[in-house]
Image (cartoon, rainbow over all chains, first blue to last red; front, side, top):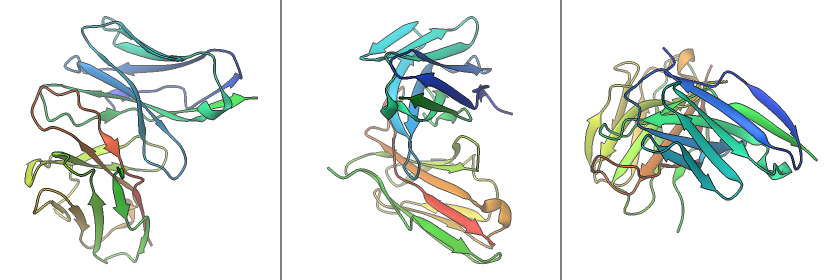
Length: 113
Length: 117
């Protein structure tokens, strides 16, 4: 049973515009959320995270929003750049657990120059 | 400052063969994780070590899967009598600390792509 879901397998955005990637989760015990970026033939690379005590975290062009009541988070990239083209994975964990991550199935972002 | 490394990068095995996949975590990292990523899916947790202790192996799909980290650094994931459904990318990740609660970043290796024929 998939506890973290990314319902959009792909997204195409024009360079300079905003990219919005969405993620939903079902387990209310999750209290820490992350986004990873993955290029082909490489492992996932950490991008940004957010604790459940916050509803927004920003790092440069990347902002993650968390809506706990809706069990939904999103990643905003603005402005989008061609180098952002990759697969983005949403992940969640329980901080008081072993910290193993539960991943979504990923969204492939293509930024068109 | 090398990252997490894994070897081999690619492994082709005949059904029934045993395989061993190696992970070299970032030096000094206490925690080490193994994940399995099937085609078109996200990584799924297999097992977790804190130093040499295997604290969670709830994600191992069968008793054919075995992992060890005898000296608290390098880890090996062994799969006995491989089956076609074992074909996947096996990812290793490490993080700095081991205590909970923790928001330590997990750093991933490039993975080993296993194909079982």
